[in-house]
Image 1: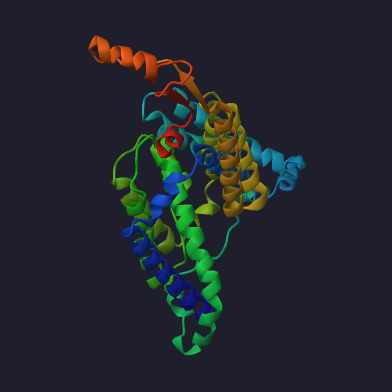
Image 2 (image 1 turned 30 degrees about the vertical axis):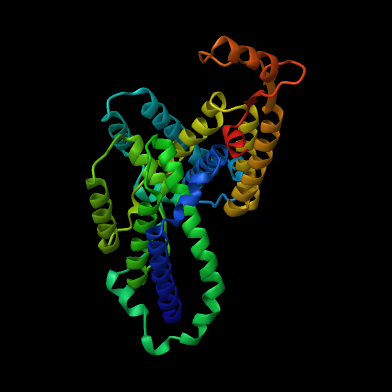
Length: 379
């Protein structure tokens, strides 16, 4: 345990330092060249992932692949998931239809209050709700001080550090790429430009501090970022309140999952998932060419079955092929008839007409290029 915590913590700190250097030298700019349909497919995948996670949280079963949806054929699991799905759809409609910024937070507070109100009037106890699966299972409290007793520096196998090098290198690639991708996706969803390199340095500093404190690797919580944006909150106090709340959760002797309706926690993820899927599968269809939309769907499916990195790579390949084929079909070079608009003396105009513009052996040709402008400028 001591070896695991210390070596993984140091790996995280080293990763954070590398991300800071990458951001400093603006290496994240390469992500800006990702095609829009590929990023859209990734966003749709994030929506589906949030939907999976939300339903899994409602029924207390892991949903990682399409076959796992079979859990909903069980009567109890379907009953547990139904309120979360309905609440998620309700929150999606509220966020899209209501103009008043206070409606969405009020709606979120009202959902668990309704649950406890129904439970109270029906005479159910928290224990009965726990036995059925409406709230999390009880577990013994663990003091925060116990975390400090996990590490014994005399028991650390420093020689095992070399075994982590290849995995660490892969982790640097995955975290840096996924972080930049998240920033690009968030920027696209907000409709505002973000400094990807500056954001990557932020992720690096956070990982560096986390690693030195014995924590593990992390990146942006995409769902929380989008959720905060959806609530129209633009205050830095959000970050301070979240951090303070997390500290309270760690030091509190109460396990909040023991008293919080699981379907309510799931509904917040389902809300984000529904919103992203609707935006990047349904609404985006009218903003893209058909071929671009097919690239988006191909990326979405590829990420599902091949993983994020392989799926994004395949999506880029498909986008390149689509671009080449589309450009080849629409790019044309045609000769057009044009005349100089300059004022010439009669003798000079005569020379131009008989030599330069002669249809049989013209010495001046005007060619019109239609297609992607950089092909013409490159020539």
